[in-house]
Image (tube, rainbow, N blue to C red; front, side, top):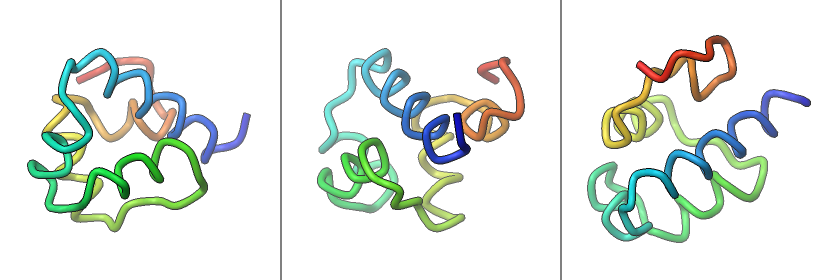
Length: 73
């Protein structure tokens, strides 16, 4: 599995687990709900500052999302 697939898979899973809507997450990180969906379904990656906000909004470590660790935080 390549890095894009790991990021997509983990983001999708953790967004579902968060019980937040795409709109709520988008509001927290400053992007549209459609952009959040693209991060989960395409090879489009967030900008670094958006990625940091996304990790914070989902209360996850960046290492986990990137597949560098299996620890959530």
